[in-house]
Length: 203
Image 1 (cartoon, rainbow, N blue to C red):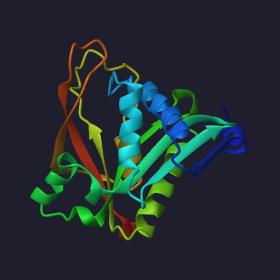
Image 2: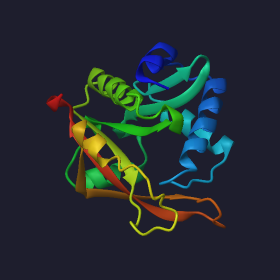
Image 3: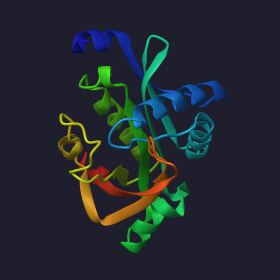
């Protein structure tokens, strides 16, 4: 799909949080996260419950990219102060106030729609929501993988340059560990997540 076709056919907007929408987006999230680098093997019920919990704060936002009526991507953001201890503890330990940050939960997009500017639009809308809520910083966490991991695709795209162009920087002080079950694994395991953050005063 060309950029012109994407602009004509794909809508990116903030939407409501009804149960049917959350389940559709839970399916999308599971589909994208099964691939590298997350290799996630989740369940629909867990995903729908996660989204409902993440979006409970009135300032939280749910952004969806659609091709017609079909969701092809989604992004979420919510005030960091309402997140779990696993998310907020590294910031407190580093002397950073979680109440000043907006936490970007995920940005997922089906492969055939990447490279069309949708990722930038997801960030634009989430940063606008963060500023509207009075946040002075935005942050997200990305999984860290061994460069020699056997499941790493040979042609994988490194997203770090994209994030850096958006003004985000990896903070060596800010790490957390989350557990999930990988494809083919018998049980959940720990995964290291690195936080990237940006001052919203920088634009």
